[in-house]
Length: 302
Image 1: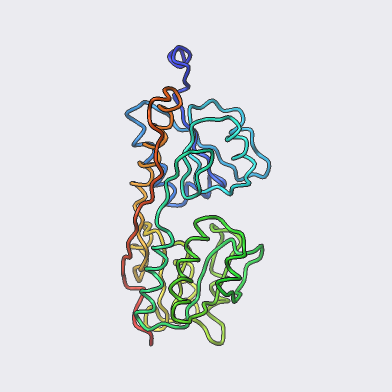
Image 2: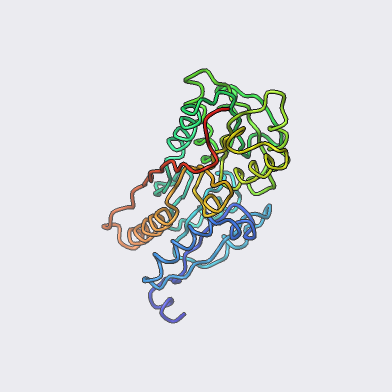
């Protein structure tokens, strides 16, 4: 405390999450990101304060907690807590969302990765394709959207980029996907997946927003007696540890969560240096590459 007073710093950085911590810490991708941030900042002696924003109107942590800077992780732009944090004019870095106020952003090639996933199913001969995502409208269920209709629906950046990546590839060959959406990414996706897989013209291939959703589609398929990949191919996104643990193993789009966390921490360190010495350069935004990882959950159309 004495050192902080002498230096005019707190020795703490905040990480703003859009959801309740019980969701965040149970997800292996977000937990891995947080671990990478902590590892990168440890040599600087910086502590991390988690700032959950999952409770409507709860802005006390971001309004009152002392911190030297903050990482904002995939938050909606109209989140009340985010508005309070930006009004404090702290050095900030945005992750998986657009940067604001001249700050840097760290993102991955969500759209390109989604294209790779869709092209993989198309190359296997699939033309009846479903998409399982979240945040498309207020209600869960199965809908049929054109690219233009989907573009008109407001949604988070990650959802938007992955959806457009899938539709880029599918629309090129005249395939109109059937979209199954659940209200929240962390909810049980089996009911929506079951609705999708019991359609009269059920898909032979399914593209999923995350590996967690892909696991739920896999579980629904097994409950319905649909063989994977003989009758149904499933592709996830993120390459979380559960993708390799699943049976069969999930084909997915891999992102380097450790590299993303470390890049965000380095960008925030540079933003803090610039705030104390304007002669120091501002951090630059980065977009990290992704790659398709093919496992046993995908195969040729039957």
